Length: 90
Image (cartoon, rainbow, N blue to C red):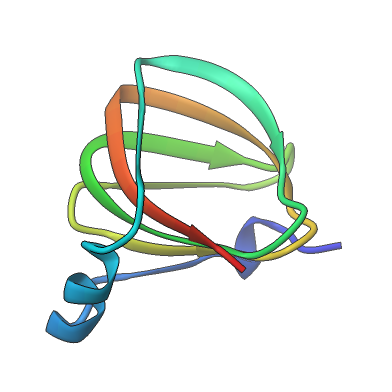
């Protein structure tokens, strides 16, 4: 079972940023909710601040971060500032 430590967070390359701009956009207001990934998700945070926890560890990321969530991750999202992201599954 993947954990928070398996999430990849980095600054995207120019090519990665351009690729992301073709993806759908997801928005969410400040909130807390549980989420289970049934496939890999890759996203680029356009704005906002988020902390993800798996009950043991947590990690935070925000505007400008390129994030890859592994298939099978079960976690809790805590959106601290309204988030807007490009996202792609698979």
